[in-house]
Image (cartoon, rainbow, N blue to C red; front, side):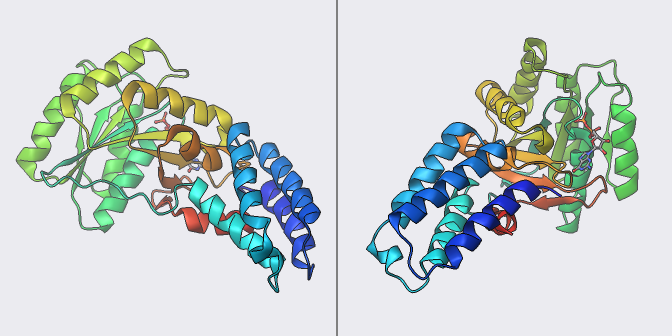
Length: 296
Ligand code: GDP
């Protein structure tokens, strides 16, 4: 289960605080030392941890909290609120263009879950009575086109493909026209990923970006990769300008670092999380629900 270690450690800290009728400054300091270690161990970015702990301390130490009847509970509430804020505060919704189609460009490293997430997102939009067109723009990974076509068939969504001999920029351009001609209100463009970020990849993505002017550039990252996911997000954001992040594989035993750091480090909100391989395993991301889940 994701966040298991973090949840267990935070629960330990808070059960000590909760039992106290009075909480001293030393109690708060001690608790925050433990929270700090728990977050670092969960692979949360160290600067993010430092600021987080400082904020919680500042809000917890003072008469208002310490003289309350249930100081431990008040401090847990403060942590809950700060965790929620750390992940963006409120839900960051998908943009909707008032000039359809809304163009969504999916980017990320190979294996992060881009292609499957494209299918899942199409399914989610269909549930809202939209008519997405999927675009097979990953012409380099063998089988990526076929994979998207199979997903499209499964959910009965059209897939635009021109094979693997035509440039992805041209494919994206023609797909946009196709969506306009056929009344598709969303265009979901799957793009190529590499094992690592490289200049050629970024150059091609920039060209696609310039051609189709996406309303959303969603970075798909594997939550299991922790701080690496955050570094990848930083890099893509600098070079391409992201509008949101999709965290995949949250059904695995990720420690939580990516979920807790990516917004604070990059400024990009998490818009969706994926919790499994099935087509309906994609969910909009709710910071407050995730904070409650982490606190257990
Ligand atoms: P791409 O190279 O980024 O297009 O990656 P794919 O979409 O092909 O996904 C790579 C692998 O990760 C596939 O086996 C997916 O089924 C798997 N995958 C994607 N998202 C999730 C998820 O949320 N949970 C789990 N357990 N597996 C996932």
